[in-house]
Figure 1 (cartoon, helix red, strand yellow):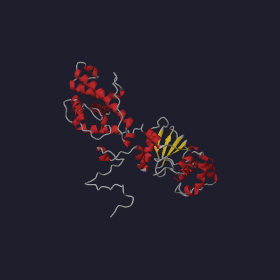
Figure 2 (cartoon, one colour):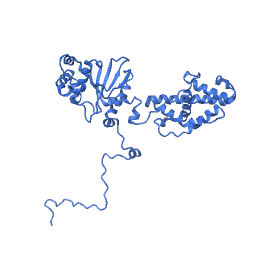
Figure 3 (cartoon, one colour):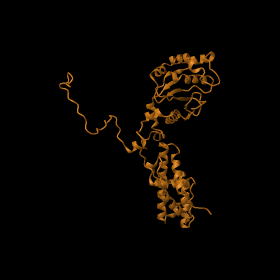
Figure 4 (spheres, one colour):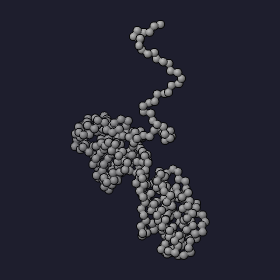
Length: 374
């Protein structure tokens, strides 16, 4: 059989011999140990898009708490009976002025049809004096506000007009379960005079950027803790915040030397004990710096969890019979330094001296007692 017409100079395809390699996709991800165990890391924007609605409200509350210079207090009200308030932020101790952050979590950008009932609740519950009119009312959504709604927000009069038009279908039976809310009479006059310029939107990019300053950001998005600053040097004078553990150490030194001591200054002839006391104070301040670092970058109870873990690991040693209180201190700190701590968010920045410092913090709180009273 001859070649088809026009194929005179066309090369004849060759038949591959043996297995051929699979094509490499242009977006192939280089495998790492982390990817194999946990999958491909998601950036913050992607994480927010797959976040459950209730968690989204928690995230917005965390972010609002970062605006410390603007708000006195931030509370989450989301849930049944919230009257259209998800996250509220109070400027002062009083109920007014305040800002509302209305959290909406949908697969796409927020559109007008998804906000009418919320605006209806805002009008109705301020009309009935359930709460005052907020200073600002933000819609917050992981996909942002769509173009159509964004244009309406920029035109408050048109926004109000469309709310009135949509009231019967979108608001009348949705505001409260006790019955329909008719838009008529004094309430209609109220809505017509309501200042819809308080309605705002905020970009998710700005929220993520400001959320980085909160102590929740690393827990939610990873990325590691920042470098820990050097601890403070203990002051020459004993501070009131360290009085109890210092008193406990003096009692332990007294029991060890057989003396009744009022202060460590009476141990100038015992260089070993004065050196031990100096190290104890350095370690206490080291642990205090870790406490402050944790409060700046992690949820408020994470450092307390670390203290509890160390307490539980050393308490049996504290409870043993020892020759005196000083020996109890030394043996307890040795045990604290040996403890295997494998799963705590502060692990990457935990110094050896933090462990002994935490022992002194626990003694400062009377959770450890060096000299056992008979």
